[in-house]
Every structure is written in structure tokens, then in C-alpha cells.
Amino acid sequence: METGNSLGDALSTFVHGSSYRETLPRLKEIFLPELFARPSGLADQHRHSLTYQRLRHISDQLETDIPLLRQRDVLFPLLEWVALADPSLFYAFFLHHCTTVGAILEFGAGRDDLDDVLAHLATTETVGALLMTELGHGNSNAAVRTEAVYDPVTREFVLATPGPEAVKYPPSVACPGLSRTGIVTAKLVVDGQDHGLFCFVVPLSDTTGPCPGVVIEPQESAPILPLDWATVSFHGVRVPYRYWLRDSAQIAEDGTFTDALSNPAMRSRQASRLIRYVWEVAAVGLAAVTRASAAVAVRHAHARYTNGTFAGFADPMPVIRYRNQQRTLFGALSAAYVAAIAAKSFSGPEPVGRSAGEIRTLFTLKAAIDRIAEQVTADTRAASGVLGFSPSNRFLDYQGLAHAFNAAGLSTQVLHLNAAWTMALGFDYEPPADEAMSQGPELRDPAQWRALTGTRERRLHERLVAELAAARAAGLGEFDVWNDRFELAEQLAEAHALRLLVDLVRTETEALPDADARCLVRELCALHVLSEISAHSGWYLAEGLLTADEAGALPGLLNQICADLAPHAMELADALDVPYDLVGAPIARADYETAFTKAAFADPA
Image 1 (cartoon, one colour):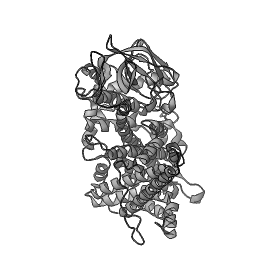
Image 2 (cartoon, one colour):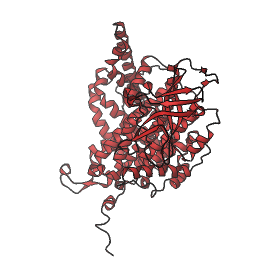
Image 3 (tube, helix red, strand yellow):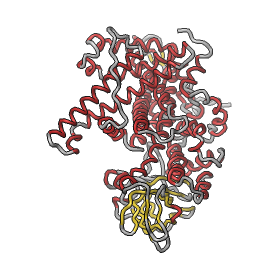
């Protein structure tokens, strides 16, 4: 395939959008490699302090009059580079700028009595945290036990943790010497009546220690995502009325509570609106570390030589020549492009009043990107041999971030089950239309990907709906109706996610004006899509959607795609625009050996 000088630019635009390169000079000014070098050998307290120093550094470089959540064109590129530079910082960054500030903007909209709080957060004079989940009841946000009891005499709320099961976990608020402000979810109790969950702005600590009534107990820092994790409980903490993020509710001077939402259950569901920020942030950050892992590993595979058994002990050759390495690494590269396309779909202006279907798409794509990130970071680490386990090469850091976000914002499995539940009930959902397969399909054709993945989604949906109806007709309770069908529900959600990704890939590739780039990206994305189809080839065969010959030919087709991609692998990797100096992985360099042997071969002079 002929490639022109414009190919790299076309590929970069495909990954990031047309405006990304305009932001690069500013990003490079903020993320100086010497300021963001990977921490090594620091004790936990120093490591945590460094995280918040970096948070302050970034904030000092930004326009703070407008919250980042309202500058999405600035926020999302920042999130990418923060994730690449320091996954722990990424976690702290999104908790501060997205969930903490987001809660105030979301539930305090139209008010000016919180401007001072927003100003302190904007300058990181105080660092924000989100305190939603609790130790008991499976960390469920729907079972919050923390209470905020209204005191009509002082017009304050008394925040209390009734027992160990209601302790907030795991906010990252244990680093000493910082002023911390939390967004705390609690049941609002007025005159003895539960009015559902609300968010409250709660000062947690100042530079001298926890605020009165707040107990912060440090917990062990996780090696894969080192942060100042803690448990937090409240013992008679008084919260001013203005710190109640009341949304449409209010309490009159005579103590009368009113709310536009009719019952506590509806109000409690409103508190979960913040979770969309987690989904968006996770998608952007995980797509970034997926790109970096794939690009670093592909570059290294071109510089890493072997002359083992299968080469007949001939002259050494780069490991990228081996087909098993190509299947892994080009597969990672393909998945990175697919994840980038999915993440890019979140980067525009936030839709006003997302529909149920749009919300489902949002969290389904978050789950899909997390799954890709976990797989790619693990595969690229393993494919890089012993150097893949070197912390300096970043695979372990990035894999840790993917593991952390598997649980954050509801676990991937729970998101899959929620998606299947809404689809089974028909909430803003229509199964894909039947698209007939042509005889002898060319599986490299994206139209065939859509026909296969759409048909799988539709048939799994039909089966789930039928099984649920039969179970209900047999008199089973709703728990038992679903309990034996969770596996089928997950299969449906995963099929739905793959079909969404196929639709995005088709739309984005068809829009590419550069014919060479369009052809190359289509080949690259085919590797990911056809690998997913191949993983379910038995199902497609049983359903009559693939013949035995077609299913049997899939491994050979994947190998052929790898062979076609091999001449373009480095260009595809570099078009991901990974800032290698910031990532700092030695194996991304052709002379990577010298990074590990500086003293031994230093010039004696």
C-alpha cells in the first residue's frame, strides 16, 4: 500500500479529532517531563504529597475562572496527558475537577452562595474528594446509611455515621498537611422522616488535621494505584444549610420540606447523576493508556531481537517478525484505535438531557474501553518479555489504572447487567434490524461486521426476553427470574458493546478523506473486530451465520491481516501521538539498553 506524507496527519486526526494538535504546545508547556518523571523509591507519604503537588502545578497553569467541566475542549486533552504521566494523579485529578466540582455545578446550579467553595477548589487551595460508597451492603450507592439530620433551631444538618457498615470507603483523603473538602452522600432526615439521598459539601480537614467530628483512618496504599486511601466517618459534624446541594428541594423556615421529586427513591436516584463524569473520564484516560501501551510495545518489538529455536538459530531478527507477536501487538494496536474512536465520541459538548439510550451507550462504551485497556495493558506487558515487568516501562502502572476503573463508577459486570436489564425492558431500545448476509461474505468488509454483530445482539436479546417471560410465567420471583440468566445478560451487553464499536468504526473510517488512511485504518480495525467475532465463531456457526469453512478460515485471515499491516506498524503506532518523553518508558527507544546500564558503561573520562 502506498503511503504519502499526509498519512500520519490523517491517522492522527482520525484518533484525536481535528483540533488536538492545536492543544499540543500548551500540553507540552504544562507537562514538562522533568516535573512528571515516574516516582521511584518514595515512601507512601512522600508519594502522596507529590501527587497533590502535581495537581496544584496543573491548576496553576490553567484559567481558573471557568470550571474545567465547562471547558471540555481543554479538559479531555488534559485528562489524556495526566493519565499518561501519572495514573495516581489522574485519579486525584478527576475526583477534584470532575466529581467534586461537578456535584456543586450539578446540584447547586443557579446559586451564588457556593462561589467561594468553587474558587477554593479552582486554585486547589482545598482538594476535593467524593464520599459515596460505604463498607457495608456490597459498597452499594443505593444502600447509603450515613445520615444528615436537619436541626430546625440552627438550620444546620448533623452528619452522623450510625455504624461500621456506613463508614465511607475508599476516599483518598489521608495525606496530611492538606485542606480537603468532600462531597458526601447521606440520607436527609427532616422531622424524623427520610427524604432520600442528597449530596453535602463537607470540610474534612485543614492543614493541621481532620475537622471536628470527622474521623479519617488511613488505609494501606495499593501498589498498583498508590493514593492516600482512607475510611471516613462522621460523628455529629455540623453542616451549614448552604452546603446542602439541594437541587430542587428546600426546607422552609418553619421546617416544611418540599421537593419537585415525589418520593425518596426518586431523589436517591438523582444523586447518582454524578456517575456519568466517572464514565466519561474513565473512557478518556483508559483509551490514553491503551494507546501508550500499544505504541510502546510495538516500538520495542521492532528493536528487540531474538535468534531462538523457531528461527533456526540464524541471525537475530526483531521479534515483530513472529506471527504470534504480530497477533498480540497488532491486535493491541487495533484495539487502541478502536478505544480512541469510542473515547472521542465523548469529547464534544455535553448533550442536554441525555436520553435513557444515550446514557446506556455512555456506560456501555466505558465498560468496553475498560475491558480493552485491561486486555491491552496485560498483553503488551507480557509480549515485552522481562522488561514488560519493569515499572519504568509503565505497563504495570497503566494496568493498575485499568483495574481500578473496572470497579469505579460501577463495575464492568454491573454495567453490563444494567445495560441488559434496560434492553430487556425496552427502555429506549430497539434491537438491530435484520441485515442479510451475502453469500460467501468477505469478512474484511465492515458491512459484514455490522451484519454479524447486529444479528448476534438481536438473537441474544430475543433469547433473553423469551427466557425472562417464561420464568415469570412459571411463577418465579424477580430475583430468581434473573439469577440464572446473568451469563446470558452479560453476553447480550457485550454483543451490544461490540455492535456500538462497529458502528463507530464504520462511521469514522468512511468519513476519512484520505483514501490510503481509510484503507489502512479499516484493515487495522478489522483485526480487533474479527478477533472478537472469532472468539464466538462456535456461536455463529451454530446459528448458521458462518459456514464451517468460514469459521475455520478466520485464524488464517487474521494472520494475513497482520502480514498486510506489518510494513505500516511503526507509522500506525506513532500516529497515536503518544508523548514518549512524558511516558518515559525506556523500551520505547531504539537504544533502550543504555537506560538500564548508565553506570557500567559510562565514559571513565
